[in-house]
Length: 180
Length: 331
Image 1: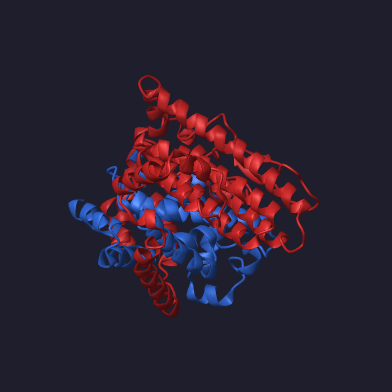
Image 2 (image 1 turned 120 degrees about the vertical axis):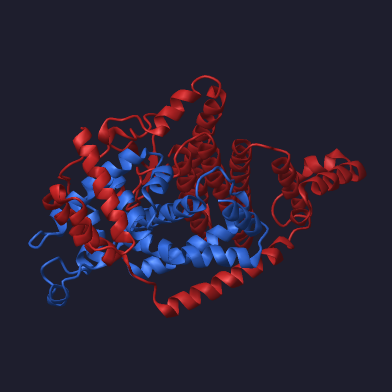
């Protein structure tokens, strides 16, 4: 924790190495978090890039409050997603659901027996927003339950309960024959 | 209830093991009495983890890294643009005092009415920087930035009347920076008072509700209303902004009080004045959202064709930036 505080202090002074370290340690996880939330890899690339540009702009206003620094990064990503969804709701676009083959209709996927990220993203839309957040933070960002709890302002017990109910819901939606 | 909690703990332990590479079978062997219930959930979780285990394209990763590093290197150069920005707050204060002493307080007062592009405008911005530097709290800085954003909109309106498209765009960007600062500082102030970093009211399902029927939990109701734009025009969309009342019932999913609610209860005593200040800021920004968009749209209607793109840009940026600030203030 001390190391992280020192890293952040250096980053706040625009130390290039510190900022690069923050970038390298978090880039993939932030990307996965965004893809899982929006189900669109191309958009997620742009948004991930923007998250880190926003970090450079805003890091001087960051204040250490005992939360992991990653919580702040995910908050920026979360706001970016909110902006994206708001803009998306204003302009006519092809819904994500229509760009991705539904479960059970893709021979290649069936042959590989693998679920694609876009399918999970669509399935996740059936979850409550809190369940989605837990799944994204746990499985894409790979935060611990304790970290998710702090980031969401919930107890660890509540996060575990959300995690359980989210997996039950995902199972129903992702099971063969389910219509997305 | 205890049985359910035990199962959730076991499930979480197994998920953690899967995340570090342990097999499902290994987890099941630890809890044979729960194996039949655990196995399907672990398989779904493992599929989800595998699906989420994607990497950005290498060419995108390289490009993004180069852009990031270029942006990092650009930061010190950007700060050199303004004389007063370069100064530390204390030095900037001294510089402003020196200007007042040398040229008289009338200069600062006159600068208050100046427009972008005028010789006194840098004094106006420097005065704002000093006011920010002398304000210790994040909430106070957020309030000031809201005032400055309001001032930028006033400047845009006056620049539109003068017919200066380039300065309208520059001032729009400045307004956006003020409103980003409102959002960030409001977020800091809220987390300092114990509120969560995340709120789920604007998460995807709330933005674009999916078909319902989640099996085990009731979706938490959100407290948003669709607020029509000040002067709706044909085909114009509405922007969703939060209501002033009814904070989202965080924790209502499971009938437990969340830390957010507990924090609010704790602040009802000593911290009440801070809550009042936050509520006042919310109302101020919400009022500005209505009034400023109204004012900008009125200018757009009257503007000559050469000014319309700049004003449309100002309206789009103001809509987004105010909505972002309101997100952070309300949630």
